[in-house]
Amino acid sequence: MFTLNPLPPQIAAALVQKLVRAEPATIGHFRHWGFMDPGLRAMQQDVRIAGPAVTVHQPGVDGTIIGYALGQLRPGDVLVVDRCGDTRHAGLGGVVAYAAKVAKVAGVIIDGVVADIGEIRQYGVPVWCRGLSAITTKRIGMGGSFCAPISCGGVAVRPGDVIIADECGVVVMDPADAEAAADRAIAMQDAEAKTRARLDAGEKLPDISGATKVLEEALARQKG
Image (cartoon, rainbow, N blue to C red; front, side):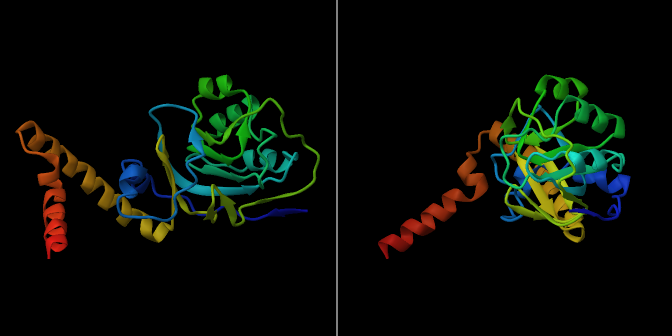
C-alpha cells in the first residue's frame, strides 16, 4: 500500500543560512533530544546542511517510493528515509544520487545502507547512512509512504521538521524551535573565539569554563 501526501512548507533562504551556521555538536551542549543514532554517518568530509525534512517510509527490497520522491523534491529539501530496519539492501545508489543532485536537494539521510559510494561522492550529494552494500532495492510496487511521519536514527521525524547535519551527527527540530536554537549555538560558537584568545594569553581552561570552581565546591562539600 502506498500513501502519498503533499510536500511540507519550505524554509526561508535567510533562515537556512542561519541554521547551517549552527553546529549539531554545539546544539548538543544544551539539547539532549532530537539527535539521530551516531551509527548514521556522513559519507563526505567537511559537510553541513540544513533544510526541511521530506520524509519517506521505504520498506524492505522495494525502491518504488524513492523513485516517486525524486520526482517531487525541491531545491533545499532534505530527503529523510526510514528503511524499516533493513540494513542489507541499498536504498540509494549512483543514479538516485545523480537525480538528487539535479533536484538540488540539500542532502539525503537514510536509516540504512547505500551503494556506489564513489559516484555519490563524485556528484557531491551529502549523504548520511549506516554503511555500504552491493545489494540494491528493486522497483516492485510493494508499498511505502511519502511525507508521512517516520522514524529515522531512533528519532521521530515529521514532514517539514528542521534538519541540521554535519560530520558529528544529525539533529531534528520543530520548526518553531529551530531559529532560537541556532541563535544560541552561533552565540556559543562566537564565544569560543574569545576562549581561545584567553588560552593564548595563558589562562587555563578549567578556570575559564568554571570547572575549577565546581571542583573546589565539590571538595568543600566532601570535607563538610
